[in-house]
Amino acid sequence: MKTVIIVAIIVGILALAIGLLVGYILRKNIAEKTIGSAETKARNLVLDAENKAETIKKEMTLEAKEEIHRMRSEAERDVRERRGELQRQEKRLNQKEDYIDKKVENIERKEESITNKENNLIEKGKELDKVIEREIAELEKISGYSVEEAKEILLANTEKEIRHEASVMIKDIEAKAKEEADKKAKEIITGAIQRCAADHVAESTVSVVPLPNDEMKGRIIGREGRNIRAIETLTGIDLIIDDTPEAVILSGFDPVRREVARITLSKLIVDGRIHPARIEETVEKAQKEVNAIIKDAGEQATFEVGIHNLHPELVKMLGRLKYRTSYGQNVLKHSIEVAHLAGLMAGELGLDTRLAKRAGLLHDIGKAVDHEKEGTHVDLGMELLKKYKESQAVIDGMAAHHGDYEPKTMEAVLVAAADALSAARPGARRETLETYIQRLEKLEDIANTTPGVDKSFAIQAGREIRVIAKPDEVNDEEIVFLAREISKKIESELEYPGQIKVNVLRETRATDYAK
Image 1 (tube, one colour):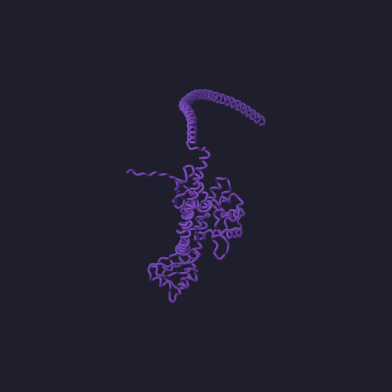
Image 2: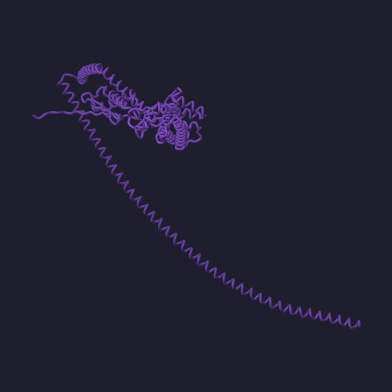
């Protein structure tokens, strides 16, 4: 039994060894086949790679050649264009050189001609001097007087004649002045009272509300005058109901209150319900509306000028200027205009633009204060700006615009200049007729009282004066001095906006008749 087991083990071992040997031989054959196939594939891949590389190389070479050709073509084209431009520039330069050469030649010819003319003039002047000397000598021989003696005699006679004529003229002027002084003074005073004062007060203190019909006047007055008393009490404005057809006149010095009264009355007329309770309600609404308008106007002004961080009360004060006028010029629009002008000038001079604009916008803020407070608008404005914490530079710029205080900064000078420019702009301000006429008469009187003036005429609304000189008293050389003298007298004696042109004319006429 043991022998069978041992034999079986030996047989198993032999079979295992034989299996291992056979497996090794089979595996070796399979591996050799696999390696051979891989090598074949590798050689094929290498060949394909080499072929593709060669192909890519050829393609890149062709692209490079094409790119080089294209760049060479572009470079040649640029060179041709630049060469053409250089040729054109060279041509233009040559033309300019030719033109300059011609100019130089012309100038040289002109200089030569001028030199020749100067030489001829010098020679003619020498000849003329000789002729004059001969004539003077001949005149001295004939008259028996030397040149100096003849000058003295002539001047003495002329002085006597002028003194006599001047004394006669002065006496005539004095006599006419004495005769017409009282009459003229009465006419001026009467005309001023009747026309100037009435017109000025009317245009500054009166508003007119149109009515749909004259029956509305009775409803506005109310039973026993209750309605009109309520309106006058609540608004502080007098209502004038007279024979004026379909209109009611509102009279008052405060333009804001007058505007409240106007809006109130307009709303009551549209509504038709006119009684004290309704009047009180409408007045309150009108006050709120006017306050809103004032605030909006102030904010709009600051926005237009580009000034921010103003105190709300100052903004309201600016809005109140919407209802203020100065010689017919709206003060708010004037303030905006001054701010723009001051800012522009400050920008041109390299100064603080924002400071100039701020001072220009606030320069007339004192005019927004009610009449109950005393003082000039400059002093009132300074108090307002100090109260609402404006900077000292802004206060100085505002305070110096009328010359009440010395300007401490360049911006203050610009504000004063901008204020004068805005006021002097043609059409900016209105004058009463009498004031306008007086200014023109004063202008003509200044010219007429100047020696050597025959007549004068103020034209162009007083911006020019045309003076007719006496030809026997003033020669052509002296009219220059006459114009200068008149302009200096106007500057010293007359106040006016802008400038006045003085135009002096001299004419000599000789008249004769053929018989």
